[in-house]
Image (tube, rainbow, N blue to C red; front, side, top):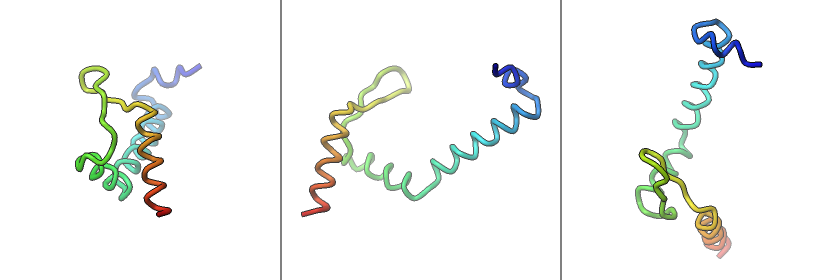
Length: 76
């Protein structure tokens, strides 16, 4: 099905990888990313949980509660 990906130096695979890299770069270079990073660094986002070496996650309930407080503060 995705045999073209096995040819890691093939034209189609390289084009796909370049496209994915562009999407990633766009996501991690915008102003929203910088705001999110500042929020995390300031301790304003829910506590992250280590799930394995080098990986963290957040509880959905914590994020929903955080989002609720943000929407309340915007309407107050």
